[in-house]
Length: 280
Image (cartoon, rainbow, N blue to C red):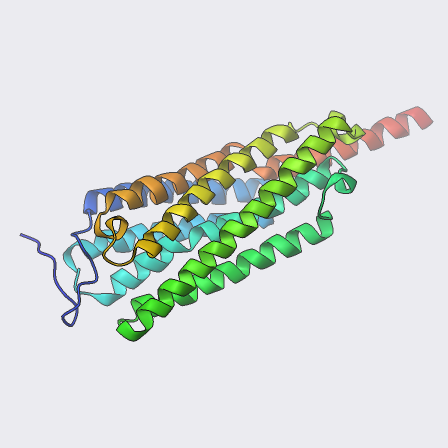
């Protein structure tokens, strides 16, 4: 019978990680990864590449978690699953932020945004990269086995998650204000573009909300500490992280922004043809 083992006298895990649950989510994220890379190859929307990589990170994370079932004393599976499940939302966020900029440009609504589209990607993706680096550094410290650095690693992860929540809050404000303004003062492009841009904006609201809920869960997890309920039990990870992040991959595939880009190109070509016809 498999038993919980210690690593140099220190228990990395508070429980035996569920192998079936890890395998199920590993398979789900394999499907999501393949689906997003396939969609990427069809749409050539390369700004979504980091999203597909994020889904692949989840595969690695839950694969390592499944492997850890019989190796709870091994440091490497623990490090891998910790980092590769912690970091994907930052990669998802990068594509989400860039999608908003493309929606604004598609409807020619730059003048209605509180942040110019040229700066929007730089600000949000820049903050997201910083959050990713801080969380990654903190996760590396926590998994290093040096107890003197565990607290510092936890604080770094909390800081990275705080940055992520702050950026998403500003993102929501930017998106909602833009949405309200363009509904009040619609542009010609907002009527003529083939893609239903408001549905893409709705998708961004939903995936952002899921990532924010997950980030709040992670903040609570680290605030409660190593002996807190959330780290002592496995089910919260699957309910408030794995399930929500799989939902993000499904929603982003459902309203993939690559289709929005294609619709914009098609609409531009149609306008050019109509202009040529009128001149003829």
